[in-house]
Image (cartoon, rainbow over all chains, first blue to last red; front, side):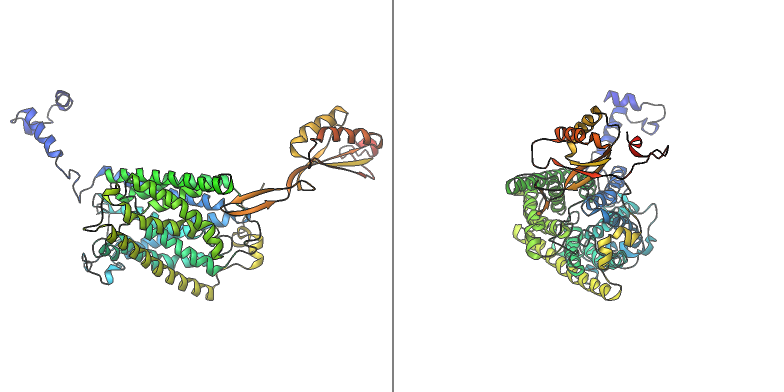
Length: 459
Length: 113
């Protein structure tokens, strides 16, 4: 107390309180600050804002260069630039689309949106926020304690990474122009509505259903995974797959990218709290635990099955754990993190190996196997491990576990069907107009030369 | 003059180079190549996709020597490059019509060494 008095006893600082004894007035001030909700809703909190500025940067880092390197190292050297180009170009394209209309379709919550009411506004937003003209440097957004510009940019990074994930499915054979066209329409017709349904607040479809999706199990991973599955089936297998050997040309790049994804994901999950608080801290912790668990699980499976653990397995296991914990990160505890990590390690391993072989599709970089399967597993288990009895932070509203898991399943099913159908239609139209795939000779020569007239390595 | 081409295991390069300089050879050329004979390749596994890699990295070492140095050179190479295991490699000897030193224009045995 005396130290506090000494430190603020500069002349004039407590002029107004001269008449009240100094110690008493200090007590009153301190008591006021200790009242609950000292960071008042709808008032800028610089702590929250500082964190969200950083979280935004971390999530952008996940795409450029995290995912870019992860994917680029997995393809053959003649296609390395094509992968980097797709991720880089999508980053730019998605940013502009978000500004023009994406943000509006996703987050514009019209007056029509009412808690518990399902109408057209439950599915997609309006166009009032087009070109982001509705906000300026003083507008608050997100949870009400950060500038809306920060919320917009943060969500933009999710809008960016989701289509970049899909590129893993059709790597080494899809036309660059077709990719750009597909991504444009997919983002506006699939991502933005699903994002709206999950995160636009009261009256949104998934919110009405009581779904818990903290950082994007449905919006990002199931969406990307299902689109990836559709794309790799419709674009077709790479020539020579699966007999011809097409090993990763640079796993050092891939593992580097995986590390960047792991680190950046703290922005993805902990940042989805939109505040610097206990839930963000919890999200960070469970993210780390799930990822670590999944890494060890995948390594363990390989060690037992093949006799040796591989670094590609470790890196892929990590990504699987990151994907699965995404929807659960704001609602599960330590038990949930370990369980989800373990489950995703197993399920994504099967998804990337057994399921892929059985299905006969060429999901080149396992976009469906890891993001699709991992997203589904994580979204379902979110319903289980949010239970306080299992260390979780609680169900939605008055739900019990059965109701919660049912709600999760509904959102998963809806996303799969909606994304699957629209992705199919888009791909079909593009195939019939400009064509999805490069010709055989170009595929053999490599996309770097044929689509971009460049070579990745001039050694 | 004869060209002596040796395909050897990469880790044997230093040993062969030292053995050749010891018998007086002052120059040689190497290329990194891949190949196989009786040596089996190895397996690689990436996310459940297994590949057999048959072509193994080797070093091709070439020297051109006067006829009277051929036996000495080949013997030195064999001794230095051998590890008594399958895959040690092979040596090929072929005839060379002429050699020219670019800087001076000399030809014949004077151009060697």
